[in-house]
Amino acid sequence: MVKFLEYVPGDSLLHRLNPTVKLGCAVLLAIACFVTSNLAFLAGMLVLGLVLAGSCGMLRPTLGLCKAVGAFSLLLALIIILTTPRGAVLVELPWGYIGTGGLLGALTVVVRLMAAAIPLFLVFYVTQMGDIANSVVKQLHVPYKYAFTFTSTVHVIPVFMNDMAGIMEAQTARGVEFDGSLVKKVRLMVPLCVPLLVSSVRKTNSAAIAAEVRGFNLRTAASGYKEYPVRGADWGALAACAALLAAAVALAVLGA
Image (cartoon, rainbow, N blue to C red; front, side):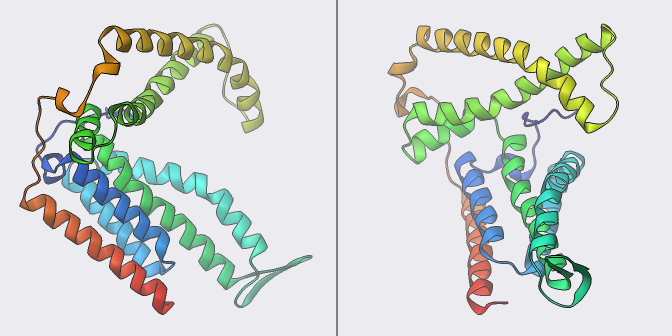
């Protein structure tokens, strides 16, 4: 079973691309999604993300990601529908109306968030965190402490999720029932934040001590032995992503 934001080994094209290039391509695709509001373009970006996920065997986790992002963006969509009276009137409200324009805007937001999230999450599934940190330090000359902070933050998310799952399983074994309404689940999960916070502080302290003992402050760009060459496929991927961004900008300028 694929765990959240954990590297999955493979030999696909995405796995073989330069880590810095993958990160740059993901950022370009995400920017392209936010530059334009053209629903057809955003739908195409969503399909492209799903195709890329399928090419590296990550389609099922990606669909789960789309489901989670879609559920999160429903609140934004509801706000847009209720506060953006545009287009033909569908439902009259005391403060306005629900129109076709509001529904289209809500759908655009949902598709945009899903399309922008897929490339960024795929980077972490097909690239080891150490390679991301080392490549940006070597090729972009980012100070190692900043690259380490970024990768450590991403790495800690699944750790916290596993800790929370373990705490919930322990509480379930003691007879606590987490089934029920959302309010009940929130009320039961709030006390679990205390042991999770204590566990997080302990792990953070242990990680800081381990990094200091291993000479973290002495780390430089020349400390890493692994090289990350930029090949033809990497330049091609960057060019394709730049072209998509240019297309998004053109659509935004033309108002399409």
